Amino acid sequence: MGFDEDWAGIRSGAPARTHGAMGPSGTDPGGATTGPAGGAPDLATAPAKKKAAAHTIESELEPRTGKAARCADAATAEAVAGFDGWATASGLKTVEATWDKQVRTLLARLATERDALRGTAVAFGRQELDTRTRIAGVGPSSCIDRY
Image 1 (cartoon, rainbow, N blue to C red):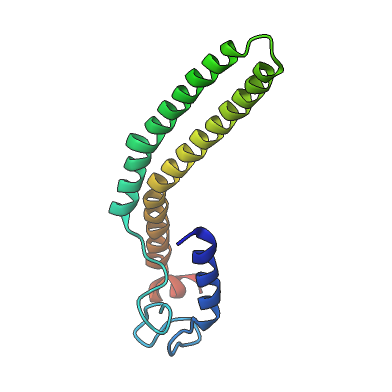
Image 2 (cartoon, helix red, strand yellow):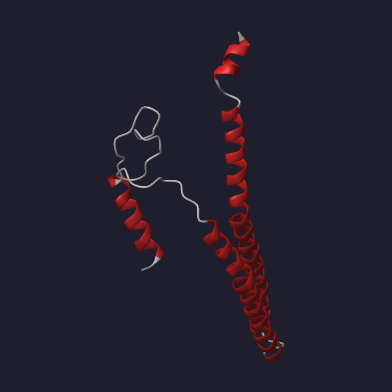
């Protein structure tokens, strides 16, 4: 199944998402934020999967992309040499420059995704610590001390 089919399926199922019984604060009576149809929470993280995905990008996708780019560059250089003096050689040089730019863009995107996957756990950890600190500062004694 391609992206378009996946996306259409996701979009067609989106209006059907309903939440279970919720209180005014968006939580169920037990206090947990509910997900679709009152099921598991919407927000879930999988640090091990994110780490594995980042490792795959770093150890497989980036090196293989670089290798494929170098292979294509070598083949294009041979073709340019073979068509020396023809307009085809000039066209191939333009294609090679465009290809190199696209490869650099792809490698930068892969690095961004890799770093984002690795940074997500840290961001969630910081957010949780911040929330805990703010909650710990709120209590009966802190309210009484102000007045």
